[in-house]
Image 1: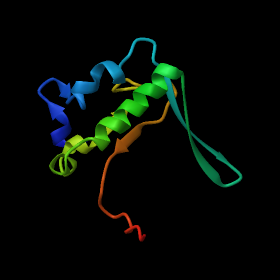
Image 2: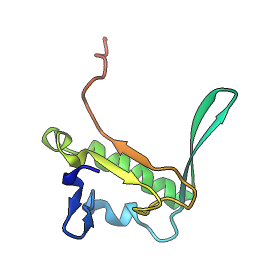
Image 3: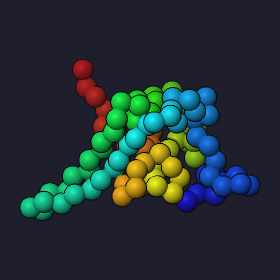
Image 4: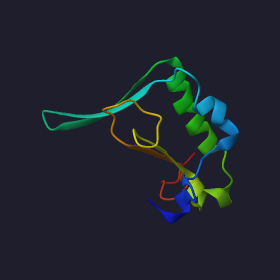
Length: 106
């Protein structure tokens, strides 16, 4: 974990303005990794509030300014330890970046 991700009491809250959307009561989200016949698959399953919470995380990250994207604010951790996912889930880091994508030609 990056030191910028911590405050004096633990992990720094990301997207506090979307707290109610990201942490609604009853939200359930599970992230799994499976392998079959050499194929690796990430599975994301959730109830409606859980999937809306994931969408709120993605929307919140996409709304960051260019300056914020160059800081530790550019990502969000979902894991059993930090909360947000069900027991048995693998850790998921959702990150917004504008670097390294090929140019789209028109």
